[in-house]
Length: 165
View 1: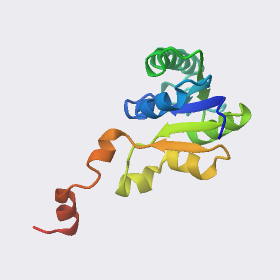
View 2: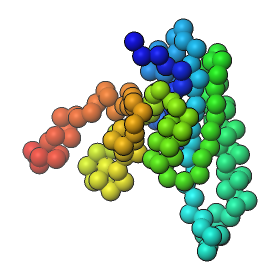
View 3: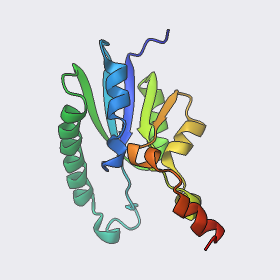
């Protein structure tokens, strides 16, 4: 049996990203596990151009503080009664941030939601969850939101895609 001491739960603060709550709660039942709730704040700021798109250092710090407060609030709702909860905000690329944090902090498991993008949107944007699964040395449990599980392919979608009219 695997002993879980630290679990990393990355989020983009969207409602879909918190579809992991049922899986997380079932894992946490009767266990003394430390949960790290992680948000990566992407920044376009560079040393040469510190004020691109209104992303000054002060604005970034304000966004970090807002995200940290939001994570703390969400963590209390997501994981009620947990003894050890760590809200974390990092700057930078989400994939590298998630993988680096999990390895650096010796997390035993990453639990994250997939957004269920398919087709062109998936090809253009890619999937943070998919890349984390592919490149992480830490085991990853990816959870598809209930909305995406119930009606993955509807008959109307097949007819439309195959032009059965």
